[in-house]
Image (cartoon, rainbow, N blue to C red; front, side):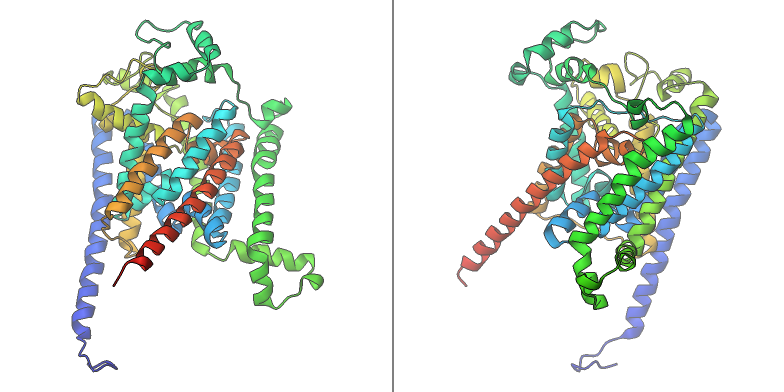
Length: 490
């Protein structure tokens, strides 16, 4: 047929092409899911104890699907707020942590709690600031980079690569930088009894860990208030006081500063005559303004809580504290730490397993990576084939890929040179920040604050501050680029 410009358009050919892609995308999605099912069955046939690893895989798939469905990313939340004044993603995050906190409280009452409070100190704000600064230039946080990789974004894959190697190098390096650490850290570190394989007087991160972090204390609100009743401690102190109340206040602030004015204009309301009912309607309108983001927040909160419960059940069933014990029993001791442990948080976490990926590759290249606390004493360097949290990150990528294919949102995207540089540099900053803060936007904030640990709010504060500075500098960069383009002669 002819369109208005007189150009002939073969709609039959376009429809056939669209239909072919739809069928292919469905097949690709089904193939990914089938491969995960086949791999799971194969692992269980070899040894039923691999179910512990498979729990991470399948929860990773769920996280990836919800992240992709709601395009759920804390980098987007910070950027949208400070760059364009849109609170949609930030509201979704508040919904997610509130629901997670309720399920986490029920899990704690049931005796299957796996999340321990983080040491409380200045390192959280500093590390979170560096992390928040980095996410603005990569365009994705730790979880956002994973789900965007599942959508075919190779720039996000570079972020993951950079996060992995920057962490591995950062925690294992030593040299002139060691001389910058305070003498009190060195004295405290050397006073602690350590295995002969390790030396905490070399390597600044070991001194930081043994001489500073280990001297700090972490506590939930229930611990601080010395609440002994399990119901009161879990639901009132940890869930309501630490998570739901602050999250609700943040939602109100977001409404007042970022949503109310537009809502009043659309509803033709005057501030002087607005009643409480009008404001509540406005808050509800803000929450429901993006259904997908709200649903993603609900799903992530529910599944993150269930993940803690299922992992706790399995630990009780096998009588273990750490997955390394199961691996040792199954004959997989290579890659375990000195204590026969591996990184096994028992809940949604991201950056540490990526550091293990980088360390494993570096070990294969002949670089010693286990003469330090982070890998040698605590987390080990397991093969990616038996790294349970690592499979959770892979699951996020695959889950996002499945849903992106089904929603026709999958597309291979190759980054430009500028985008690639931003991805690598920003990812490096994210990795360094995550190690200083002892976690990323998931492990140090989302999962932490949802389990009654107020240190998560310090991470959010630092991340938002870093993101704010990052947005301002990024806008200056864009303005400079635009001016260079305008000054170019035709």
